[in-house]
Image 1: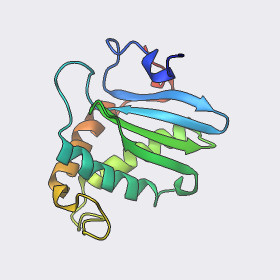
Image 2: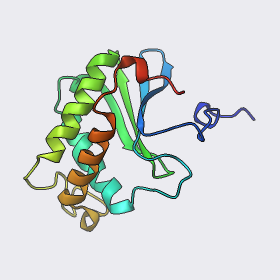
Image 3: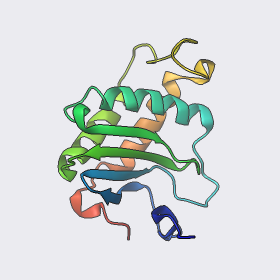
Image 4: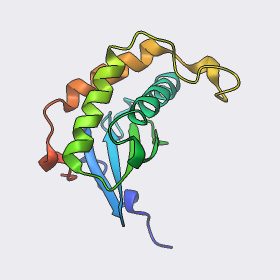
Length: 151
């Protein structure tokens, strides 16, 4: 059986950043790595779930909203995947940073926080999402297109 692409990356070398994980036709998968893998430093479930709700909502209301295919967590709890159609890498980086800044400053209700809208709505907290967004933005604030390659 062939290995999937994400298992061919040396996770010992990955640091918190944004990477182009793969390109499939017109869809680019971005690895939004928030934690260094295999260090025991994981994103807890409530923080991951909360940031997922907020980032997905904000990015689907951004200038790239029509090209966002998917945003969701990595099972290893070290980051998220963002899939974008017809991606312009600089524009995506700018949108990621703006989205994180907007979440960091957000003071409203958690999007999708009801029993009707979410299968685990009690596990959502805007403070956790704001904290995670601010910490990650600080880690990636100086990245550019040249940083999108796994080193």
